[in-house]
Amino acid sequence: MGYWGSLILVNHPQPPSGTPAFAGGQRVVLLQKRAGDWRMWSLEGQGSLDDEDLAGLVETTGGPVLVGFVMDSNCIVLEGRTKDRATWRTCLDRTAMSAYMAESGQSVDEWFLGPEEAAENAVEWARAAGLTPLPEALAEVLSKRSDPFVEDLFQEFLDGLGIAR
Image (cartoon, rainbow, N blue to C red; front, top):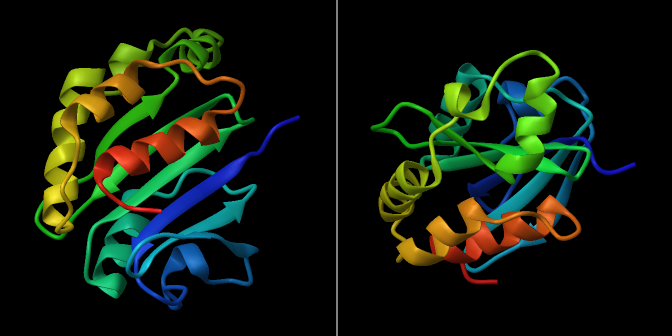
């Protein structure tokens, strides 16, 4: 059985305490430090964060936020938000996500941006964060299958955003 939970990426040296996502005694674990103050936190077992949670994280950290809800290490719902833009949503490993959604009669294309449009949104998100993204790398990652874990694709996605390890 794989990981279920949220991966929260913020440009902030400390846990953004006081936000709904980090409140209430939930189990929040620092998973990774990247260049500068970029931090990736794990919030295990929770459902995907809602738009209010993302807005609160942006307000608290003062910068763009990226959240990935991981489903059994097979696929990830990605949501990005900046101060000036509403939340955009896509997924990593569209094939695996399609299998989850087929159970409810829904399709990936109904809920998520396609790889090209998602890559454009990711580039805008990265530039708003002061990063130098790699658009081709982002589009490629958004079209890939996970092998074996989708968390590896998430790391590639962060690399494509221009967040150095």
